[in-house]
Amino acid sequence: MVPALVAIGAYLLGSIPFGLLVARIGGAGDLRSIGSGNIGATNVLRTGRKGLAAATVILDAGKGAVAVLIAEWVMAGLGPLAGVAAFYGHIFPVWLRFRGGKGIATYLGIALALFWPCGLTFAIVWIGASLLTRHSSVGGMAAALLTPVCAAYFFQPGLTMMFLAFALTVLWTHRTNLSRLFAGTEPRIGQR
Image 1: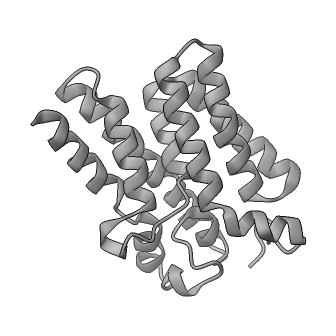
Image 2 (image 1 turned 90 degrees about the vertical axis):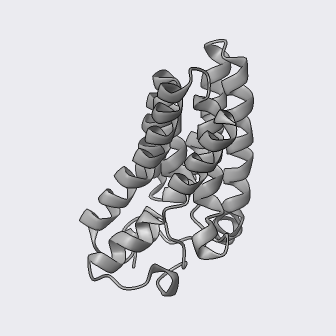
């Protein structure tokens, strides 16, 4: 019963739509009717409110990390299960008819909590590729894809498979971004 309860709790934690809540509380409106309609930090940034976007990143990453850390506190070894539940809770939240975010910040928090070298790699690649290309989507996808490579380098087979599943999911959640990138119409960072 403990693993099942941990998975349910982590899913519910992961499904909290912090971007939507932060934007509403901060007076930026309903994110679902702004920009891409996504509830993530990049769309919050399109409102022109950098502070709200930063808060969204911190909260979305935080819920992934907290889910893992609580699970490990409850029973050693349940961190990965909680990470999976929180990640997919963010992408498919029950509160929003299973239409959530794209998983980048939550992935970061989970990676930091499970194996910090992979989390650090994720953060560096995400920031670096985003600044280099001026596309948050490119940074997020690059970080997602390189994190399982990092886990494999450190001989973490379980995390390698888990992060690979996350990376493939991130590519799926970014399918419209990929289409826009190939068409040359993907908005740049800071563009409203």
